[in-house]
Image 1 (cartoon, rainbow, N blue to C red):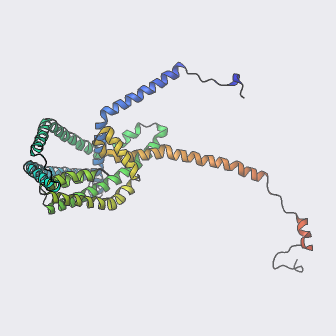
Image 2 (image 1 turned 90 degrees about the vertical axis):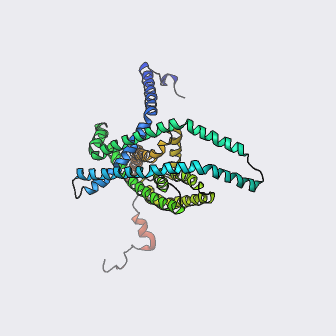
Length: 390
């Protein structure tokens, strides 16, 4: 039993208490600040991803033309493509909304008739009309907030594109600016994190961009064959939702099914089957080729991460969940996992050294030559030798 007089007592000094309270206050302040500006942080991440899409083709074209000229050309094509899509999509959206406003009540009446034929119980027409009127009234009350959110989204999109253009024009400048904030003795480690995370993000973004274009084209062809109004707008929405793993394809199918329901319920069923098959093909081909090679993240871990961000920060977090997890995985691997493995490897090496030293200090005893000589009554000769030759 230890001597009570030799037991070391742990006491808290005033400086220790002040340090702990200061760290707790700093953590609460940083978390509160992030909670207030998390939308800006997510928009900045989206700007970085768009900057990668602009910078990589410009850098590729810079093999033959100056980078500045290549950058202006790629940026012009990017903005022109976005503008053309908006010009083509807005009339289709207006037309589709008008068709839904006219045809949706008729389709609801058809559903009521179908239910009456199948169940023998007719739904109350007055109750159905009252429910529709309530929904229309709620939509009218929310029109101003929706319009305000649409304007805010447009302004935010413009800010994202401008920030992406600045980042894509001079990425080395911002890279040096970030690395200068790291301590000099840790700058090599943070440089490695920056480079590996940037390489993984670049591979993922380029693969995801190709997948988005493919999904958009296939969706437009399929919806056009089904005769769905606003096929271009729905295809662009499907391409945009392709950016969100796991949840994106399901979200993209809902407005297409609603638009197809305005034609007939059976068409809506066909559209649902079309999106289901498209999602299965996408999960079987594009996900293994694009995401798992660029970002080695288990699907279950990614799904839990997406749910956490979506519940905590809203729908915008789904767009940046995978890029953020990619950077986090690289940082944890370099800062923690590799250091722990190096320490374990060093501990095993230190444990092996005493064993080797003990073996050298106590070598095995040599065989007894006299015993060998007595065994068999003669000396042991190597094969092929004889006594004459000896």
